[in-house]
Image (cartoon, rainbow, N blue to C red; front, side):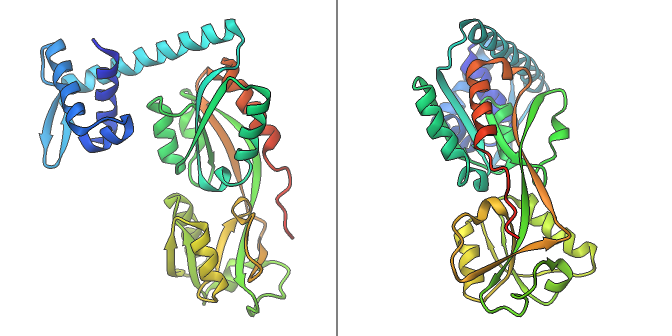
Length: 302
């Protein structure tokens, strides 16, 4: 059986539409259909069936995907063993990082790695933690940088390794001249009557903030949703909204914003996630080591 066809079926089991698989693999939807049809010819049994606009795997398809997972795992383990023996930091490496990490310390890490290891080619893509972990499982990413608010690293036990990078404190963003501007710290309860703008690049993060408000007895009134820090900053700076954002996202906030620590002090942990055992691969180990060195040690703005 052809490896690429197996990978195509594996992607289809996770993404459920030919178009989504085509985007993930960088081929056309018709090519995806062709790969699946050829794989069905190879094994002599139907692997997928149409369901509305999407497709579902047949029992045979589901069984084959389980074998494909094992096959690709063994191949990656073999690659790691050979790379470890060669002890060469070279080749391609893909990082999937949530936007706040991708826009803060990871570029500095990539720049230093280019100096230290000129034969290592790194490609970074911004993704939410859940999407990044899906890419890791599909061998479309080698390292995922994610926080423990948006994704629980413990759900990966046995299948992945996690490395702590840094703690990131949460802050309240206020427009200049806001009634709470003189406060040294701000509690969520003090924001009960405000309009909120939330970063929804990670749906889990925005849901965690909303749930924290509900836990103390109020539903935040949201007048801005955006997957762009700049839009949230603009809404707050214009006096339309307030927000709660992590310190890593506040590198370039404007002078029209006031930033105050959230009380009680609230933190998230940033982790690097890799497939189980791949920390032995020299290129993965080199990147993890540099991420630890580049991650900020102190994000306290109080």
